Length: 112
Length: 110
Image 1 (cartoon, chains in turn cyan, blue):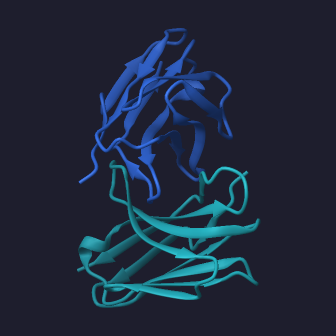
Image 2: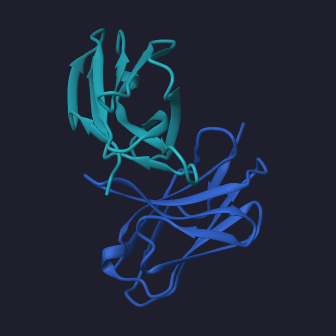
């Protein structure tokens, strides 16, 4: 079964608007990561947040993590057409071998 | 920059064929992974390897096997391809870092 579930499944916005994607998970984690996938390509790592962190920034990206609610959000500010892609959250579990479990992703379309 | 190379972007095979998907990484990573990606299901882990000749099953290993004879190369083997194995296959590698992915192999089994 999947660990992470993204919401919404699809998001369509205009350039300049902010895009917010959410991820919920089920078990304890030691980190949560966000990846981006352009159409027909592999995934590219965007940002990692550890379980003892609440917020992290990288350029136009802002990630929050609420371990009490088992949820995370990815905010892309001032979106551009080039941000059009699918975005996935992935969780690294506490204990055991640290393999990542991915959600089904959010498809973001940014219109010029 | 880490490079993960998958040998084929597109592959068409017939039901019952033995299929090899090859993946090579150039950063001396210990850990390598094979995922399959299907619409609405995200990425699901098939197998991973944490060292040469070492492997562990992921969440959906049935119908697949793997081989890691050299550190840089991790092969996914479909012993007898079936139509339900039509999918995008993604290889990845990492050490104490996020995953680095190849561009994927889109496999069609007819």
